Length: 394
Image 1 (cartoon, rainbow, N blue to C red):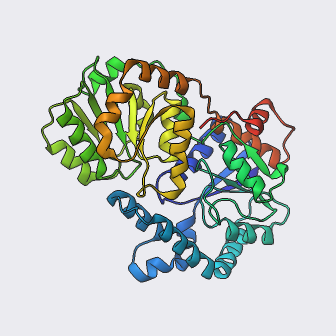
Image 2 (cartoon, helix red, strand yellow):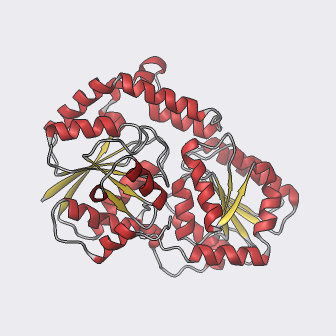
């Protein structure tokens, strides 16, 4: 039985979600592979210079920034992080080489940014003929040294044509670039079990026949969610909200403590986002690639914000939403009331729903076929051909 190692970390929720999605679909497909998920932060803790200085891991510092909305100037912080990583490059390569040597596998997959040069150098030094793959969990790269590295050994899996172009511009050969039909999501987002949206709304204590928005700002929520809900409540729109706060218990408590004029259902951390989306008509959130992709698969138009506070690697996501005409992008959530009014115009909502419905992201089912080819198992299947050629969907 061949073994695949998947490196992930918990800065944000998307990287772990990608790793778990791969593990789940490979198990469901009964592939003859052993899958090992490796938490990269735990593996490299001894080199975490920021933890030594502050007592807080790099990934937790990132999550604190997200929870509090301290994202302005994120590009400068990102480049500072990358400079620190370069200082520790050689010790990182040595540490990783020792780990890979004592934990052999046939294929290495990274679903994390920033560290792919060190990971790739360590892996190829120990196993020069075994493939190393970076699965990009953003719509595009944010060069330099984010996802794609100028090293011939690295294979990359891209969910958009723009990311493919970036890989080729970095000198990647076609054999080392794979195109999927979108971003990887957990298989349960493709659950087609019949769910009555009206019945689900009633189950949540909401009105069956009232337009429903979902507020979702990732696994750690955001204080902006309270302000958005407050503005919509004061506007008196014919609307109700499902607010998913993730692990932000303080935010959930604040929302539950308030007396709302409109119906509001507050959810803490949940693994049922895919089911709750069946009760919604549209999504309001930050332009994270996972949230956008989830909304598209669940047929929800989106309302996003893009400004100087938006994470630099997520700004392209708003361009994609505009190009595909699957939602509205605001300069600030201060404009949320007018944005919701615009989206709920019958003709506008119908157009967005048609465009969303035309997308067909099957990435999670395509990626195991890519792994099979890299492991030398059979020729190119129909699913892999789809993954290679793609059709521009998230």
